[in-house]
Amino acid sequence: IKHKKPYEVEYRAVLPGARERIFHGRGEVVTDESGKATTLHGTIQDITKTRKVEEEIRQKDHDIRKAYADVFSAVTNEKLLILTPDEIAAAQGKPQCKPLIVASAEQLAHSREFLREKLRQFMTEEELCYMILASGEAITNGVKHSSSCEVQVFNLEETVQIKISDNGPGIDFSILPKATLISGFSTKKSLGMGFAVILDICDRVLLSTGPEGTHLLLEIDAGKETDNLNDIPSRQI
Image 1 (cartoon, helix red, strand yellow):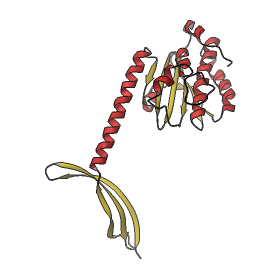
Image 2 (cartoon, helix red, strand yellow):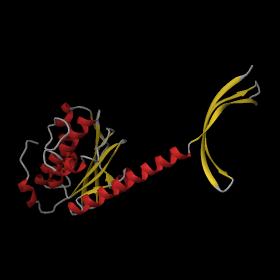
Image 3 (cartoon, one colour):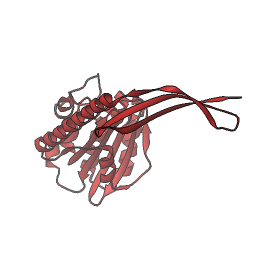
Image 4 (spheres, rainbow, N blue to C red):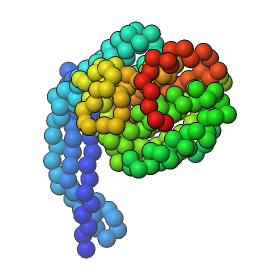
C-alpha cells in the first residue's frame, strides 16, 4: 500500500556566479507502508522576481507609513503618533480591568458605564465626562467598521490610557489625514463626530492601523488643567 503526502516548500539556492535564486516547490511524496519515501511528484518554480516585487511593495508601504507618522507627529505637536501594534502594546501601562467586548451599537451605553466605573478613581468629573466622549467616538467607529471592538483601561504613572481595538480592515492611508484631522469626516454614516474631537480631548493618541485591524490608545494626564476642553461641542454622555 502506498501513501501520498502533499508537500510545499520554499528555499533559496546559490547558482554559479553567486546568483541567489528563490524557488517554490509543490507536489506529493509517495511512501510505502513503512513510511519510506519511494517517489516524488511535483513542480519547482523560480519565484525570485515575485519575491523581489513583494519586498519592494513592503518597503514602499513602510516608507509611506513612516512619512505619515512623521507628518502627523509634527502637525499635531506629537499628540497623534502612528505606531505598530507591538509599539502600542509596549506603551501600555498596568491593566486596570479585563477587556470589555462591544459588539453592537446597542452596547454603547454599557461601554460608557463600564468606563465611568473604571476611570472615576483616576480623574476629575470633567475629565471623566470628556474621556467617555472621546472613547465613545472611537468605540462607535470600531463597531461600525468591524464586527466588534475591545475596550480596556490602563494606568501608566500619572497617565490614564483607554485602548480600543478592532479587527476591521484598518483606516485607508489615502484618507487617513481627513479621517484623523477633519471634524465630522466619515466614510460611512456614523453617530460619531470624528477623530478630530478625540484629538481635542486627549493629551495623546497612539494609533496603529492596517489590514489586521486598528488599535487606539487614548491618553490623558489625570489632574491637569482642562481649559482647552471648553471649545469642544457638548454632547450627551
